[in-house]
Length: 180
Image (cartoon, rainbow, N blue to C red; front, side, top):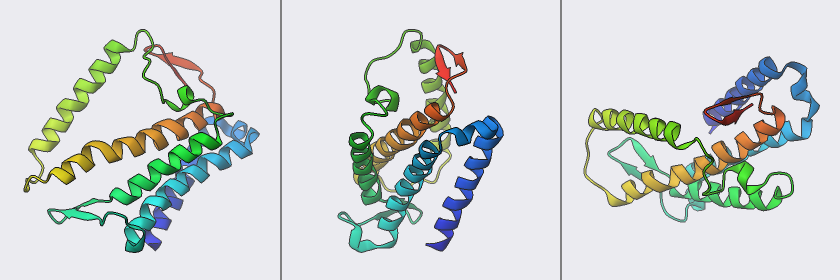
């Protein structure tokens, strides 16, 4: 457990230093928002880690596939529930659209999105063909296809990026996407 906590702290310090490098003293203008950013980061990662270290928290036992891949359904499930609770708690400060919970696509996004998806598909195919092969396990396939995506989209590309956009407002656009 200690190595995980050390890793989380080390990553948080690196993120903080990057924010200071990018924003200088402006990053301290919104200390509450900065605290919420790191609070969500730590809470999400601790949620996942604690369920791996304490089997009593596991509703569905973790599954190890081919001796190296841990499918931690519980941590991801708890993380998704945390994201839903956060969505409720911050509904007046961050909208669902700011967090990325929308099916609407902006104009001009189709072509760049298609290129990125195709590039990622080619990369995944190359990695998949060169990875160790094991027995097909439907539970592992469902886990890999659903749980990490839901968790990471909600927390990392949803809440954390929305908070960063409030900390560092967009200054330029890339393919019609405002970037901060």
